[in-house]
Image (cartoon, rainbow, N blue to C red; front, side, top):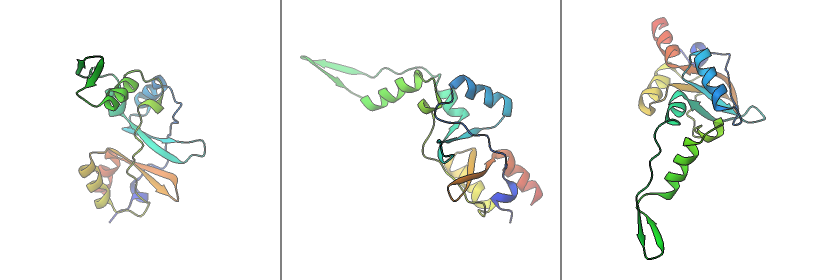
Length: 150
């Protein structure tokens, strides 16, 4: 069975939280990938930003339903969710749209487990991490290539 280190893309392009949205869009166009790992100043993985994150940034802003009762305003929906949507809608940097919960695998993770993770968790890019350092990334095409080799 093939492992992550045998199918991964070794040259990983990363972005930081300060990467502008315009630059991110240009990177997606130039490299034709599904996502980019987000790293901190020490090159440690802190998240991932995907095409979906970028596309969702442009969806319509949903204004929550409220009730005015006397001098109080009562939100019928989560005020926190609305704050997150406003932040997303006004995003100018990766920091405003990236996902901090990242599914990762180790270099020795088998192809079958990686495929299952992608299918079960609906992710299209999985960073390969060894001792907190990104050593590669696996996309859908890498899985398909691995299956063709297998």
